[in-house]
Amino acid sequence: MKIHELRSIVVVYIIIIFITFDSTVSFCPFYNFTHLPCPGCGMTKAIQNLLLGRFDIALKNHLFSFVVFLIILITLLTFISKKIYKILDNFLKKHKIIYLFLFLIFFYGIVRIFILIFMPDLYEHFFEKFEQKTIGEFIYEVFKNYY
Image (cartoon, rainbow, N blue to C red):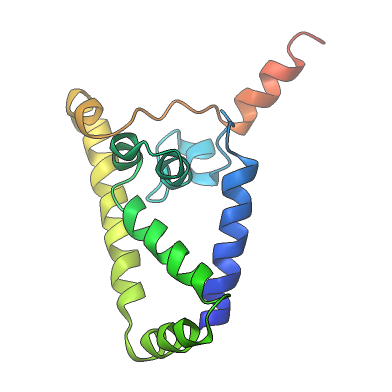
């Protein structure tokens, strides 16, 4: 991954974080189709909770939220400092750690779905309950009074 790609992803993600700050609707296609959280579900709410200082809720929303938040901060610093830009650029070129991180998030998502399906009582102890509406449910609620 190149640094300009990471910067673009971070900027778009920050926009999504602020647009959906008080949203009760999930925009995740996987969740909208299956009603199961995808490996990334909960990350946006977790980052929002980190910004509000709710670290315990952020951890329950998504285990990797602290790491993603750190990546966001470092990436934002590259807009300010050319030295940090060069350090991060060299790091991304030499190390493929981002792929390991993506694998860990994917594995976390699989484990989370497994626990949700087969051990629902245990799920509520370790994860924040995912209660967002799907886009279909949201549209239905908006228009049900009109028909």
